[in-house]
Amino acid sequence: MKKIIFLAIAALMLLGCSDERSHILKVYNWADYIDEELLGEFEDWYEEQTGEKVEIIYQTFDINETMLSKIELGHEDYDVVCPSDYIIERMLRNDLLLPIERDFGDTPDYIGNVAPYIVDKFSEIEGSGKNANDYSVGYMWGTVGLIYNPKYIPDEETASWEVLRNPSYKGKVLMKDAFRDVYTSLLIALNKEGIDSGKKDIRSLAFDTSAESIALVENYLNSFKESIAGWEADFGKEQMTKELAWINLSWSGDAQWAIDEAAEIGMDLKYRIPSEGSAVWFDGWVIPKYAKNTKAARYFINFMCKPENAIRNMDMTGYVSVIGGDQILEAMSDEESYPALDASYFFGEEADSVFVNHTMYPDKETISRCGMMHDTDTEALLKMWSRVKGDNASAWTYILICLVFAGLIAAVIVKYTRKRYRIKVSKKRKVRRKKHSRI
View 1 (tube, helix red, strand yellow):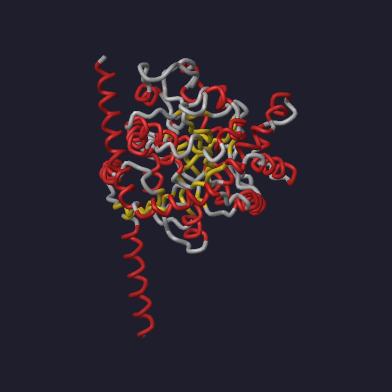
View 2 (cartoon, rainbow, N blue to C red):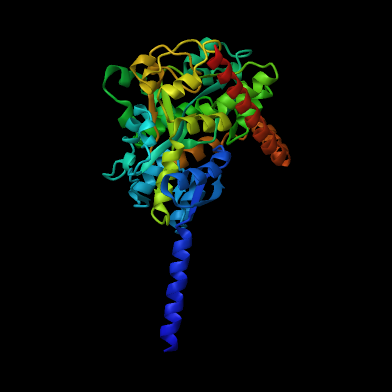
């Protein structure tokens, strides 16, 4: 009898916990990667749309693998997470994702605002027969290219990756410490002739981790590694603003941060994707296998795809939303600041001559030469990366290591300053948009 009573009490407790969990949404996202005011606004919006209350528990991570291990090994019950493209691929293959149902009742399906270019790219994700668009929705995207200082490096030189091999820039080159990004970018570039002749295509090359291709990229990296001052994970953009480096193989998001920061002190920095080609990257929302509140999760993803929310997230983070359409194009257009380019691949056929930021939205011809990264033979690529970096302990590297340690001391101050900076940039962009709306 006592056993029966105990089991009944346990069952009631579980039911109580289950009911409570249906009113909690656990979101796991990159640090500093959202306008956090939207979290509270979502709670209100969700109740308006469904008649149900929900409270967000929001947590952040710094690297994909940390997030993945918590879900894959720890079975954490996060409802929404935001992995990068190759991790989405890995999670799909390992059966760690749930499909995202797009039944929102009377609420519009804002997921349909995702640009066709992004939907097409997500279809390239290898998910063991699963279409990634059924299990993930894009959030932010960008490219891999070169941040450079035109004071020291002529614009015409950055049209090619060969600029990295110029001995005149020895000790002034920084390399993003991201083996997959660098490998994919250089592999596509080094196969330009085959791509142009039709013998090779970018989609296939993006999956290629053959011994021959790895050796090709490794030899190319070795040809200029003595010029590399350091392999950076995050400090490169700051080194560029201080003129401690002149060129940095990096991400477009970091480039935009560096360009904006440099402009504040009267410095000119630029970003370019070399003509041979490069890589594109994506982060997207997914619902993990162990999620408990899938309904609120898919409504949250839908909410983030509203154009006005996409604009706010771009303003706050500096990254580029995957959301297209006229509302985004109007918000991002600035004829006074940017020359016209063809962004029809993202905004539609009529956007073949629009005035948008070239760092955030490369032109159609440039983006056609950019391939997507994949989760292929990580071990072989890591070994190659280790071999290339291992012999590059030059004096410049030690100098930069010291600078990094000095930077760590001020890490808290830097993080606080960046947050204030993003808020300042956000306000400037809002003022600029109001100005254009009055014209």
